[in-house]
Length: 630
Ligand code: ADP
Image (cartoon, rainbow, N blue to C red; front, side):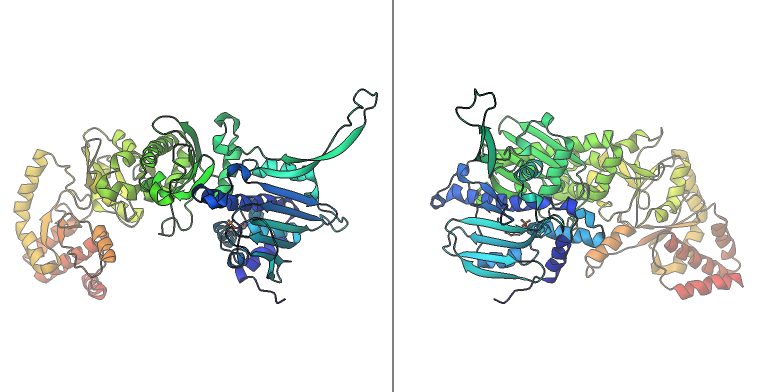
């Protein structure tokens, strides 16, 4: 029989498994049992709506059989089973999310130690077995199939006999060491301990015929009672899922282990939330806030959702309606008895109870995040680094419908404090006399700190929030105000710093400078919309500001998004009357007119540089400057 070859990436994983170190090996049992449980979940769900299945929850079980003589361990389930095609595609390639994630993890590190931290799936059987045989009969089919492989050299699929629906995974175990003929995974107490350790919460009985001993009947009263051995089908796991247990009996490590196993993450979550709610709907929930965004998080491949259980049956693996979009990073489980079991997955959509649970969970998540922000700042910063962008999208989405909920969770870079702060912290630190929340948008903080306006505000002791992510610019526009303070973009908005007297003085200055302003405008032509005087430029001679309220950053952003739509970016040129360069320009106007023109052009170019805009003709600019130097 010709062997089929594994796909290349499966082969790599397989090699890793075959050569795995001793201490990792035991997790194979958890993986095989977890697959069995998933397969039962599928048939149990089908049984809810399909009478022909003829099984109810109590009928499902996972059976372990250890045959010491043959060195074989078998894990059997009466779940949904696999047909030939499924065997081919599920066992011949890495299809599953867990293995994929594992593979990606491996690409990042060469540390094989992470095997122990992943849900590595079916292939983990090869850590302990030299031959793995899978015999399966799919529900609804009358054929059974056998998949067999002895590792990297490929696998075979052949028809076979099997009376009942479900799957047997038959592992011919390797000896523990070269000297021994024996695998520790055939020992019943070892198996029992492993089930307890890794699979205790599996919701179906994991059973095994266990050899036990008892006092022989009739010998109880003897001085030395006689013992006899017998076997008994024993359920090894307690079958109580973690979320059904009492919170105070669950150790933090157990929450973490459950998360890693169930959601294929190798990093522990930042926070886990376990609670039970009674009211309009009764439910239990176990929610997690991951430490890192999955690699596909900000793409459309990422599917949000929580696992939904009803009366112990998994109804849906990713029920989207349970988490709002802005908290789509939350993973977890919701278990409620209040859903009709016969409900179809389609009908679940927009179900009233689910909506109630969702809004309830939303509050809980917010409360937990606020708690973290207050009590565990470092953790919160880590969270914000991973999912802050999600929260910002949440603020601006749906026309700002969620801004009240989310605004306190936001953080921005404080130029004064050199770290991320919340809006509340900004407002609380405002010195007397500061009327607005000042912010600057741009690609990086260094640039922003060089803006002329920045200097002016710093002189006054006012902090500026630096916003460097593309979505940031929309936040102040959506919020409008925070704690009744208006947002002011320091490069486009009126900073509103001048007193009445200062304003009068400025009008006066403008009048005096009018001829110079006209001259500069004439020299620069359409490059600028207008030229004005500003007393807010600190030590800088010039500043270019956009006309019409849209910042240059936003113009850049929109141009990138819609390259075909013309977006105007007219500029106003502000000149600092106190600056010697500007005064020199004025003084040359009547004498050396050509020099005054050069000054105007150079000042304009400097304005472009300061605003992080490209110089339209760099060689002209160089000529200008060199001309001045000669
Ligand atoms: P995962 O379980 O994460 O999907 P595995 O590599 O462990 O990944 O298994 C691959 C696939 O093989 C499973 O998704 C499932 O479709 C199928 N499979 C494995 N074991 C069983 C089983 N006992 N019964 C039915 N299908 C199974």
